[in-house]
Length: 130
Ligand code: ZN
Image (tube, rainbow, N blue to C red):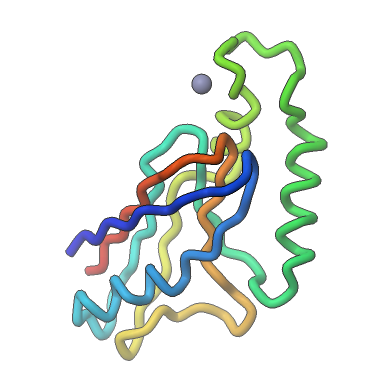
């Protein structure tokens, strides 16, 4: 079963915790044991799983990505969002999480993040639970 969610970003680059939405898709699917695929259908956004306890981790990820792939570095793609495409390619547009007991089998400190690299705007998040 595929669920779709709207994700609204407020900044150009931002990590948005979508763990609750993904868990709600798992609950709705009634799948007790299986796979949950979290997919971002955008070329300038991505999905990652990382620590959701200390927000400083998200800040560090964003700052380091901006340092490695600066917004303005003479790119060939002149739409003004070349860095966002590169960041999305580096992080990846999809993650798979195991499901057990009808719940996401995440580690104690893990959360699922929608990574906005060319916001603010409204995005789509797709979740398949099997
Ligand atoms: Zn572009």
